[in-house]
Every structure is written in C-alpha cells, then in structure tokens.
Length: 407
Image 1 (tube, rainbow, N blue to C red):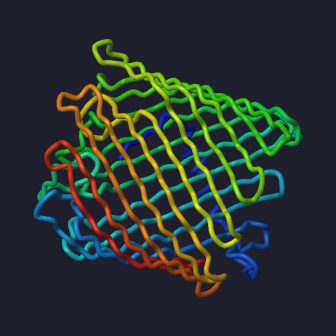
Image 2: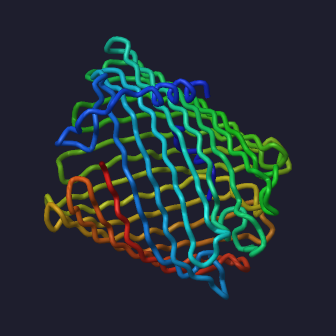
C-alpha cells in the first residue's frame, strides 16, 4: 500500500480544535427530514450519522504463500458528519471509528479513527476557496504493507498516523469558458515505531503545489491542463527523497447520458535527491469511462499509471499500472448486482532482483435496500497476487455481509 499518489492532488490542527468545540456545544437535535438521512438542528446544523457492520470470512488473513491462516472478521464502523450550508458557503466536520475483531487471533484486533474538516467559501461569482484538514490513526494488517511477505506471529500490529492539509483557490465564473485553480497540499505519515517492521525510515512528508487551467468548449466537453510538483522527504531514508513533476492534459466529455469520459494523460518526471539513484520519466494517466446502454445497467472502465513509493525496502520506487472493469445492474428500485475485475501491476525499479508483482481481484455483490435507513450487501472476493519474489505471492478468498444503517 503506497502512501502518496503523485498524479493527483489529494484532499485530507487548530481547525480541528475549533470544529470539536462546535460539535460538543450542539443544541438539541430536531426531528429528521423524512426525505433524507440527515437531521437538522434548530440552528441549521445538518447531522448525518451512519453505522457500517461488516461480517466476513477471510481464508488467508496474513497473505501467506503457504500455511495460510483463516479467520472470521467483524468490522464495526460508526461515523457522523456535521455540516453547515447556507447555499453558497459550507463547513463540514466528519468523525469516524473503525474497529476490527478477528476470531482466530485477538492480537489482530484494532481500533482506528479519523477526523476531517472541509470549508468552502465563495467571494462573489469569481472567487472560490476550499480548505481541508484530516488526521487518521491507522492499523496495518499483519502480512501487508511494511510486513508484506514477512509475517511474524510475535510482532505487534503496525500503526501509523496520516495528516493531510489542502488549500485550493479557483478564479473564474463557473458559467464562463475559462477558469484557473491553484492548489497546495502538505501531508505526513508517521509510524509509531513499536514494531520490528516500522522504523523511522518509513516516516515521510510531502509538499505539493499545483495549478489547473480549465476550458469549456460548450460542446459537452471540458479540457484542462494541470501542472504540479510534489516534494517528498523521508526522516532517515534519504535515498528515497525525490521531487515529482507532472504535466497532464485532461478531458471531460459527455455527448449523452449513454457515454461519459473523464481522464488525464501526461508526463511524469521523478528526480531523486541522491544522484546515484536512477530517476524516472514516462507517461502517467488516470482515465475513467462509463457506458450506460440502458437506464438500469452501467459499465465502468478505469485505468491509471503512476510512480509510487513502495512501503517495503524493495527499490526506490515502483511503477504502478491499474485496470478496473465493472458492471452494475439494477433489477428493481431495491435490488442491484455488480461484478468487477481489477488488475494491478507493480514494477519495482532500482531493485536488485527486478521485482514484479501482478495482482488480480474478482468481486461479485448483491445489494438490497430494505428501508431508507438499512442497506445490505452480500459479496465475495477472489484474489491472486503473483510475484517473482519469494513469500510475496498468495491467494485469498473473502466472503461477507455488510449492513449499513443511516439513522
């Protein structure tokens, strides 16, 4: 699992403190709006609580090549969102927990949490500002991430925290043909370092600056040009310090309700601070398409390519290529089914063994909406991860039932 995607401008403390103060002083909640899952207080604060319960069976929880360990897993994830919206400007605060319980081994149990704040401000018709801040405490499943291919039954769970701040300014009237946006981002990933696999070498920060020019042709088409630079620095692993530059041409096109295209294609240059490490330059893209031949059935295709920083010590970077294909069919207003296949190739560079991983996942799901406040999904996943390196290859089958409650 990589921490930074250098082809996109992602969105994630004093702001958090202000938001927390506002939440703990909320007035009494009024009756809910019967047409939505949102409660609105007398002072106009929209409150949206939710609860996800996922009960599943995983036949290879540690992603092992041999001697696999299976377990039933229960994941409970409550969340609540608070939002103030006057029709122009918005402020939202989100908080969530994610607790996992493993029947096979209590050492794999975890409790994660996240907080997020988002602010949207408009000053007249031409000036728009967006700010986000998020912090998350995350547990990494044993046998994945830093401990991939090296499961240790005596090791603790790897835990780390992610902090992300973003700010965007956009100039231009939305109804006109041209607009321009400027974005900056600062992010950090810090490991607790209480695990044999988690050390200061994995702690990393990034600072991104970018601009995007949009042009609407008024013919169901919008084109864009994005330029950005992402500056990545590790606490101690200086060999992986790099500057990543992207130039991307974008296209959004929808000739009808049948076909929609949204994608970016461009060039990426990854330059390492250490001149002894080979740089990367090549094509990068993020392209998605939707085909809806009938009102109740849709096909989705997406593909990406970008350089990534690997979690493991294998190589200074990898080139990740993804292809996703899915089909969603609505049998009625309450029942829909979906089939999906995902292919991912990770090619590690500056690595002695020329590591190459190929990941293939098949997913099938049946979704049923019982009521406005209860949705259920019965799903199955079959995963094959193939690698030319020892202990990285594995097969996995997961089946489960997910219940989502919105009060």
